[in-house]
Length: 142
Image (cartoon, rainbow, N blue to C red; front, top):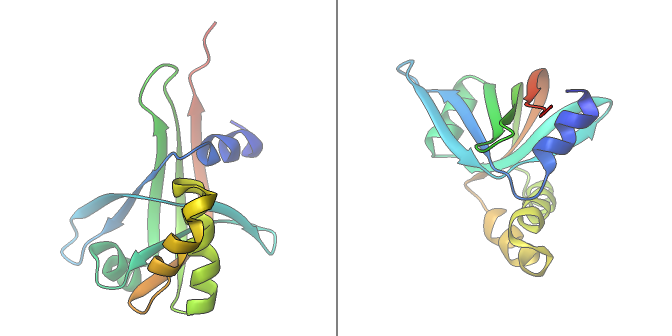
């Protein structure tokens, strides 16, 4: 897929991402997340929130590298796997902007403000992952 194709695929509807991080003991950890793609200063990034004390939050503070998989589990089977490096922020104003945008995608515009305020609080992290590699595949029918 081209950049435009994988971007559109990953951004379609309310598809969640499966975030992969590494625990302190080296074990893999995978969890579903709400996410948005964004272009910042000419670089592509993944933006999401997570709790500071969650397995994801602790893992990303220890090692900022992560992978995210977005897929469709029925024909045509397609996926995007994104590798990125996280920059973590605890700025509540910035978190509110992104938490509201995330909520608009996943919960609808009518609930975005309420969910944004719920998720942009002390103890929540804003993660902006600078994309370093993308592998994408779309099963195209004949």
